[in-house]
Structure formats: C-alpha cells, structure tokens
Length: 278
Figure 1 (cartoon, helix red, strand yellow):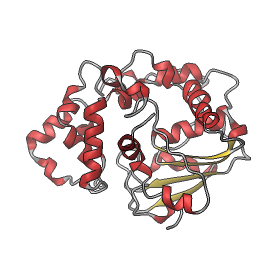
Figure 2 (cartoon, helix red, strand yellow):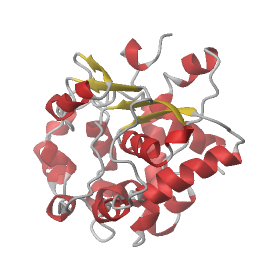
Figure 3 (spheres, helix red, strand yellow):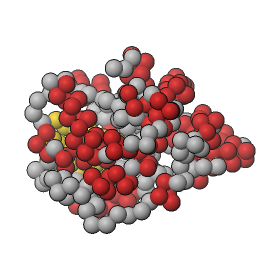
Figure 4 (spheres, helix red, strand yellow):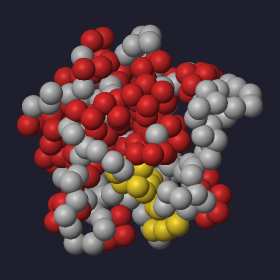
C-alpha cells in the first residue's frame, strides 16, 4: 500500500487528467509502475534488482495489471492509458489480454510490435546509463537531473548519460533549464521520492531488452494490436527524447494527434487534447 504522500507523488504525471476523466463518470486508476516509489520493488538496494524478469511483459502486462484489476473488483474491459514506459506496457497489455481492453491511449512512445525474429542487442546503449555501482553521478546531481528531465526546452542528450550531468553543472549552463513543467512543490515531491527510494526502480527498465525479447517469443502474445481495439496516440513535436519521426508509422495503426510545440510531457496541462477537456 502507498501512503497519501506517495500516492500524490506518483499521480503528478496525471494531475491534469484525473479530475476531468472522473467528472465524466469514469472510474480512474493511476498506479505506479513496478519499481517506482511506493511499490514493494523500490525498497531494497535503491530499487536495483538482478531479477529483471519481473519487469517483463509477462510479469507486468500479464500479471501485475490483471492482478490489480482483479483485486479492485474491476470486471470486463477497461480503457488503458499510458505515457512513456506506461505506453509500452499499455500496448503490451492489449497484446497479452485483448479481452480486457476496451480502448487504448498511448502518449509519447509509439507502438512497436513484439520482436519475434532476432534479438537486437542494445547493451552498448544501456551501458551509458547508471547501474547499481555507478548510479551516484545522477544521485548527486538529482536536482539538476530533474530540472533537465521536466523541461519544455530540449535538454542535451549527453546530459542524461554518465558524466554528462557533471559536465553540464561544471559548465554552468544548467541555469538555462528552469523545470517549467513542475511547480517547486512538485519538484520537491520528486526529489523526496527519489532521495528516499533511489533511482534503481526507474533505471531497471533500461536494462530490460533481453527479458522483453525472451517474453515476446511466446506465441500466445499477439504480434499486432487487434483491429477492434480503438487506439489513440498523442505525440509532441518538441519531444527531445523521441523525435516525431519515430512515430511516423503510427498514422497507419492509430488515430494520431500531434501536438505542435509540445514536449515529451504531453500530459503537463498545456494541451487540452491530452486532458480530454476541462
């Protein structure tokens, strides 16, 4: 279970959507992904784990999400909404449990089908991010890291990998990034959360590629999203993490809304399309 403070911190991503959706009569659930603050996997060793199988599609999409719905007595089909990593697992849930999905809404991270052909090694890329032994550069510059992350201005990609934060801090250019997506109180929520629980739970997701590949060999997992499940996709043109070109293929498989000038954080309240109205 989460404390009130932990719940409010995890729901910041959806603060502009929860109210409008609930006022329209929807029952809205906003759980944290496994490994983030307040979940049982965020407790030990700063959240890092050598058992990444519990982060895989089978464990999360086919296990944790179903268990949550069953625990809360949610029967039938649901509208699944996800942003960033949440978008990945929202779409995987539709592949694993299509009978539980009424509609799918994904934001900022496009759908790519399961890789059932050959493993694409991404270890060199993943190695750029902190692990259990070298996470301290980000931890020591956590305030700067969050300012860069939650910003409508494109952050230098090198700033988000090992050594990049310290170089940016040493250069003094961090003053250009004002964390204009979060209020000071919200920024403090994230600082408190990551200071208490560590970075491991979040960073574990970036070492997941071999587990995802192994899980996606399961023939029971669909290779494409069912045509009878409506899919709405939202992406910003100023996303410095995933350029709009990476979402070009989505126009063929989803109803796509491109938000002009929007950053990666399309849920930040500046864009009515991502709020469902006010």
